[in-house]
Image 1: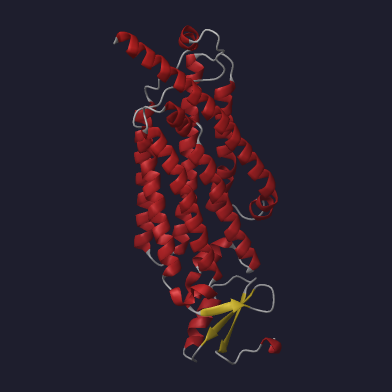
Image 2: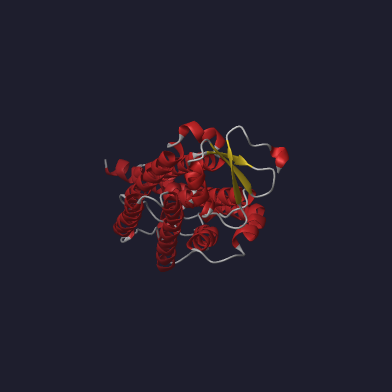
Length: 345
């Protein structure tokens, strides 16, 4: 019996080392993906975020663009340092976890600001999403602390004792207990945010096909939630499988969720900024003035023009109030339904 137990322990130890190699390969792939994504979208970043006034959205976007690649680079370094000391590995892994948490919080903050703009008229929703965001941060940080405070590093001596011919390159650590709990609060928060986004977009279903802003919000929100669901599912379920080191170690130490959600949220911000530029506005105005989607409107014949069709004279006063909120680069003109003619402009 003792021999069988020892053999089982050796097999599990070997699987842990193999899981570390898989995590290393996955980390290199994710870091390469992040660098490639940054390279092909740098022109959009320069166009939309390197000029203009500083806002919370702009700051969070830049943090999201540059913190995750650093975290992934740190992960690659952890897996590549030759014969590292336990102290180095413990510090480096904890630093990577801490920066991962900060980066995920930045991504959540971007989405929370988006909801804040979408629900300017509902203080209850704004307060609710802020409280949900704070609860998610506090809960996740507590779970992360208790899961990693006694992180077990696999020492080089232990590896050489079992496998004398294997060279130990990079840090190796076992699965932190109950690590899957760290990702449940973000999943619940993202679910809540997507429900709010869908509610906002589907409130006027009759006009949805003629409302490009709402269609873009619904499409981008669904795409991002799908990415979150898949990445959190892989990370949480993988870390839950404690007897499968080939899965749980890559799920935990490769920072898969951070890499995928970071790229997805950057794409969402590029999408809304490109739409705002196409409509001759800015993203904050676009999200803050979705009441235009409650009426029939379409692009005009000139750059930056929106044509709002009103059915009665009683609506003119309301339309004027809409027009007063629009910046100087965007014009709204009012006409009776069926009277408007492009040729008269």
